[in-house]
Image (cartoon, rainbow, N blue to C red):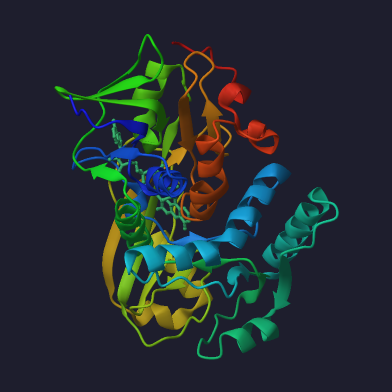
Length: 376
Ligand SMILES: Cc1cc2nc3c(=O)[nH]c(=O)nc-3n(C[C@H](O)[C@H](O)[C@H](O)COP(=O)(O)OP(=O)(O)OC[C@H]3O[C@@H](n4cnc5c(N)ncnc54)[C@H](O)[C@@H]3O)c2cc1C
């Protein structure tokens, strides 16, 4: 048994667990982070890198608000992370674009964003519609396809290098005094008779007053051990990456983003195929066709990578933040937009966990909404 004493053990060092752990250690807590096996699914290492607000939370204003809140926290969060880790994140917060192909798509997008604004009375809209001419002025180096009718522009949107983000979180939490153990999957979590929890990693055992389950899709196995049964499903996302090109895209777009290195990421699919990680030519063809409709010259670029990864999806697609009723002191944090929400996870969510109280406005994200009987 590790005889060091910890206040909190975080199971999972993806972008969610690492952000929560970074926040907890900044609150002065003694934190141990356990990460999984080499072959684990890691959405944190295979995503598109958008910090995205526009269009998120249609029909669920609380999620819209959460996303806005995180985006607003991102600039300071990025500065702190770089200061702690010495790692530049390639974070941009100059807005983002959602392209519309055809007039009907433009009108549907305008109507959807207008309805979303109505869902948050009293709050300013964070997006506006651009016609083709306005879009062209934002992207002077791109000759758009003839079908491009315009776009929506989200002023709170941005992007980041997700691998640098993860590395910065993991380095920063250690710089601040947390302990990170890689290749250490938690195999069992047990509530202790006098309070607190014992977490087993093979034959090793660690103890802490509290645990946070933040193991992405691995949470389905861990949560029920402490009364946190959350139904999760994987959703496959595939994306393509081109060779490096001269800087052409000054803003990120959903489905098309040029990285600081010059490669262009093209994506992403949303496929319900269970745990199948295959990359398919059908998806590659579909994504390439879509991208070429927007920016025909991209068809000349060499594709250098094609990968797939699995999103962590709850039944309604919204996050889960909760404390176990059966085992107080056990918490869970799950979501499918861990890059966008990283600033919220490291800030207000970690503060709530540190104070052992989930504020009222987050109760809507309790998994009790799925009506799943909880085991102890
Ligand atoms: C193709 C694609 C594109 C995406 N694009 C975006 C985007 O643009 N913007 C955005 O905000 N989000 C995006 N996402 C979502 C984002 O990547 C995820 O929300 C995020 O990575 C989830 O983080 P996580 O830490 O919950 O899970 P993961 O990143 O999957 O990490 C889970 C971690 O838990 C560990 N683990 C598992 N079991 C155990 C155990 N028993 N004990 C200890 N550790 C364990 C694993 O080893 C792993 O490190 C995208 C996802 C995909 C698939």
